[in-house]
Length: 465
Image (cartoon, rainbow, N blue to C red):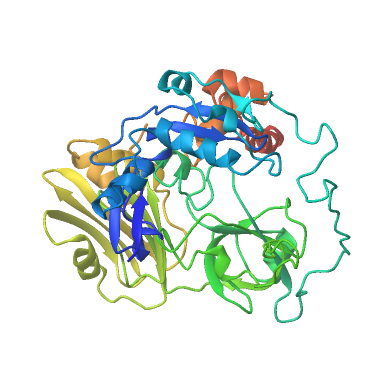
């Protein structure tokens, strides 16, 4: 029996569960957090928990009570759990373990609620100590243990069959496997799909084009991803982000490729060096679906689900030719409502939309090549209560109505500022710095993570001007 508490039901973890219990998300929890310098801080919820969602500690406590272990789980608040946590850190410690917050084991509810950030160790009856200030280490001898590490090359080197070295890592807007960020349409708006980034020389060598789909294979697995060509990558290297799992991206999991070599001391996998081969993924068709509800398309070999504001976006591609796209669309999206279609069977192109009571419910665009219209502006149609004739025409045409701007792909997630908006401002307002861009558009003035990209856009378009 696997009991899983999760933020929402459709996750990789939840698919392994026999029982699913609704847990509060990170911003809905009350408790403490500890940062990398050992500083404990009070965390207070800044959002209400939706529906029946409850904190993890409450869920575990209630399950234990119903199983007959109420005496061992007497907790009534997060403060109760913290006090026991602090007491256990001091239990049979006597200075033998570095983690000791025994001084916090008797906090009252008021003390807990007003707890100021504090750095451990904080032993009971003593004053907060700085680690290793007196030269002692938490070993039997009190002396540090130093391990002589002999540098060694990667376990497997690129060769003729797998000529590229894969490096995996994170991107600016996502957290781990999206456990804290996967529900945010704003964060998904910047980089929506798994991608592989490689140098222009390697892209030419392996027949890969910007924005096309590619298949990466290693001796251990396979993944599909969107191509990014960038001189930031050195020749011979490929970067792939680690965040996507099977739930959101079919065949988009970077870990499927990574070699099983482990560091002999730490056990750390060799995430940063796996020989891989890259080649174009030559699908019979490419497309995207926008829908008010999430749908699964089992006929799509490549499928990435992206949560947007009020709708889901699916990037799709398939190896098997489809003879009747109108029937295919109605099978997966539903035959109900009013359908409007445009198709060119000879060229393999199709565009269709389903309206329910005049509102856009779903649309699908398909092409034999990856050159599809931008889907960002189409998402705005889901905000309209009713599509008039002009909006319906623009929808199937795949471009905004005359006079309506297309903001382009999101660059600044904090303020939802698109690439086209930034480029237009640089050229028309003669902006010469990222500070000027920020003053005009707010882009880059909050978290600052888009500043490097703004600099690249500025450099490219100042040259173009």
